[in-house]
Image 1 (cartoon, rainbow, N blue to C red):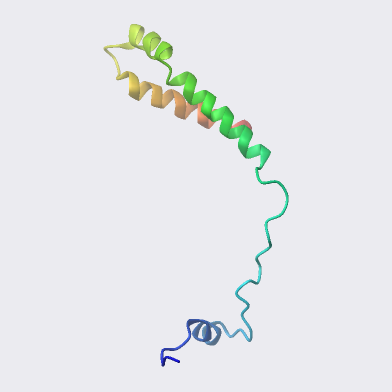
Image 2 (image 1 turned 45 degrees about the vertical axis):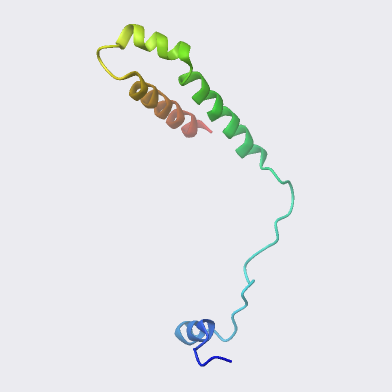
Length: 90
């Protein structure tokens, strides 16, 4: 055995705990492998990104706002606004 102090013994001295179980407070994962709510949100935001980043949307934005702002930057702002609005109501 080494002469180095055990970290858990030191923590017990500091916090005054009598017994520390390394697995205390952890529960095994049960149930479905996928959370359907998270999967549906992922699909929704993927579709939003696909629509905002599509060449058709870029062409429409470039036709009307070419000299005012960079199209990629504008698409980023549109995605951020859509993401924010959707997360408010989901």
